[in-house]
Length: 294
Image (cartoon, rainbow, N blue to C red; front, side, top):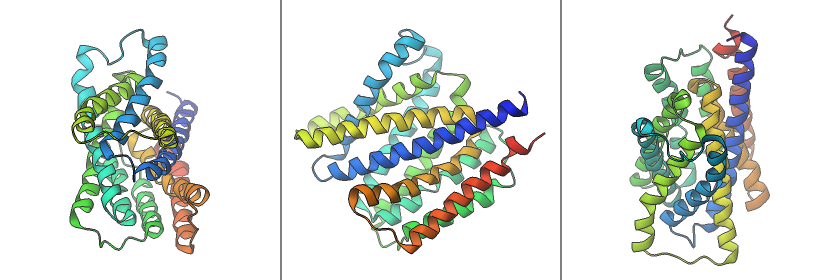
């Protein structure tokens, strides 16, 4: 592959990761608006049933009727889906029971882990810029979040578990890029989530949403689906270790969305931290291995 093609592919991967972070940040706004009325498992169920409805027509056009992959692909798809489900449940629990700043900063450990797993399992070379850029981005996230770590231990542990399982799931996304269709990967994950959460939703109490809450649940599903699709294809266009740092852009999107929809004010810390995240992203793109390699 020529250098121009590599640059183009990495650029697409970066754009998709930025879009994914924006969609997930938007999803979080809707989650916060429904968390007081709708139980965790019901939120996850709605999120993924809508994603399934989004995937079906696309897969039907592109891949015929192989909605959940072939028999040969099942071990890889199930592994990715299970890790993704565990990470999702841990994220919802940590966000719902802990101080947001504390759990957010711990969940942002995942890009570090992705870089490590990609080097070990995918044989990706760690570029010289990746580690300092990750540290810079994490420092920016730390400044924005301003954690005090006064949360009970259980949410903190769940936040770390979220980072670990999510990093496994995202590394498997990168590994599956030549082994399964991207929309099939998204569809498989959503089906596993629906099947796993349905019993909890039924037996622990289903809350019938009113019209406005139902709209928010649909928004969760749409933004969650778009974010998942963009994330899946991001790891297909660029090395996992390179694009994972752009996941920190979600911090910046959350700042602006929180200001616009939740009335949250900007602080000096948030602006400084956001600037560090942007600087880390620019450095990673300009000096990434795939761009400077001749």
